Amino acid sequence: MRKYEVMYIIRPDVEQEAVQATVEKFQGIIQNGGEITKHDVMGKRRLAYEINKIRDGVYVLVNFTATPEVVAELERILKISDEVIRYLITKDVA
View (cartoon, rainbow, N blue to C red):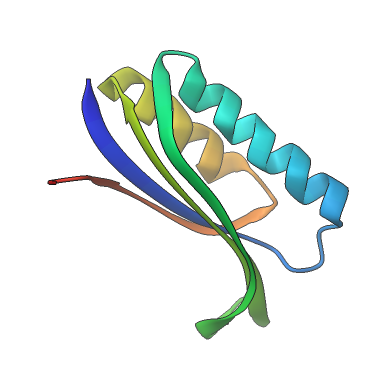
C-alpha cells in the first residue's frame, strides 16, 4: 500500500446535497481497498484560470493509502463524472 493525495474540483452549480453525495461516492471507492488518512472539503474557491467558462469550483483534498488498483479505479470514475471539472492524483513522497 502506498500513500497518495487526490485533489478534485466539483462544478459550482452542483447543489450542496449532490456535492456531499459526490464526496461520499469517492470516499467509498477509496475505502474499498484503501484507507483515508485526511479528508478536507475546502469549499468554493476561485479557479486560477477559467475552465469551460467556469470560474469557481468546490475544492476537495484527500490523503489516503491504497493499492494501485484502487487508484486506477478512482481515476476511471473521476474521468467519467460530470460533476468533476479537474482532478489530480499524486504519490505522497513523505
